Image 1 (spheres, one colour):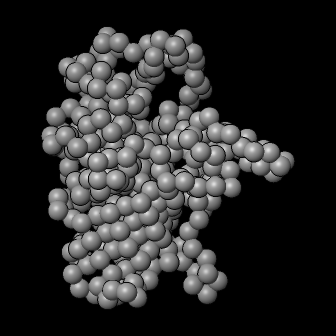
Image 2 (cartoon, one colour):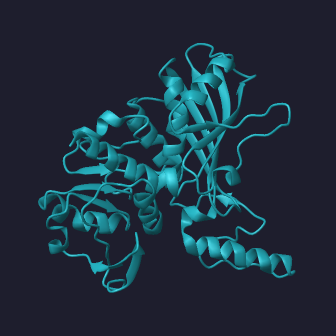
Image 3 (tube, helix red, strand yellow):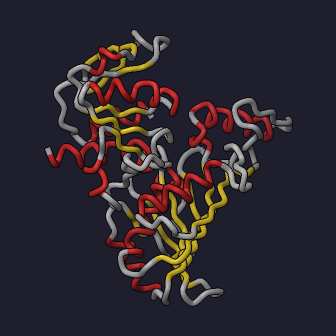
Length: 321
C-alpha cells in the first residue's frame, strides 16, 4: 500500500512541498527513492506531524487509533485506510466519484472505505441517481493481494507445490488458495456473517446515504494474485432498461465498460490489474425479478480500492483550499 501511494503521488503530480515517510521503529532509517531523491523513513512520533497538512495513514486500525489525536492536534487532516473510524458518525466515509461532498464535513479525519465497498458503490451510484435502490445482493471473488504481499507470495509458492504433486500447507492464510477457494476468513459475527461481509453492508449504506438499504454479501477468497471481482444483483422499485443502465455505467466516472456480447467477453482481473478504472460488464435483466439487474465488475483493490481512492480524497481537499 505504501509503495502504491508513492507511485500514485508521482503519477498524478500531487502538489506538495515536503513528503515525510513515517513508520515504526523497526522500519525507521530505511531509504526510499522518490522522484529521484532519497527519502529516509522516520519513526512515527508526535513531533513527526508538526507542520504537516495531510496524513495518508495505512498502518492498521490500532496504529491509526493510537496517533489520531496527535495528527489532528497538529492541524493535519488524516485520510485513514483502516476500518478504525469508518462507522463513526462524525467521520466521512468517502468515494470521490460517489459522495465527494461528504469529505468537506470532516472533523480532522476522513475514512477510506473497504476495497470491495469502493468497487461496488462506483457501479451502484450512477444507477441509484436515476432510480431508487430497493435491495443489493453481492458475491465477491477476492484476490490474495487483499491479504497482503505475503499471501501473494504464498499463493505462488503453493501453486508450485501442487503442480509438483505435493500437498500445500498454508502459513499465511488459514487454507491454501492454490487451486482452491474458501469463504473469507475475517471473524464471524453473531449473525453468522463475517466481518468483511458486514463492512460491505454497513459501509455501502453510509456512502450511498441509505441507512435502511437492504444489502447482503458473501465474500470469497479466490486464487487470483491481484484485483477483486464481484457479482452484483441490484433491485429497484421499478424496471430499469438494460440499455439505459449500460449507457449510464459507460459514462460514469471511474468506470470502464467491458462488454462484448458476441464474443462472450467481459471484465477479468487481468483487465484491471495496475489500472485505475473499475471494469463493469455483463449487464443483464434478472430473469427472476422484472425490477432487478445483474452485473459483473472487476477492480484493482490496491489502486482504486485503497491507494488511489485515498489520494483522490486528498485531491478533493486540495481543490477547495
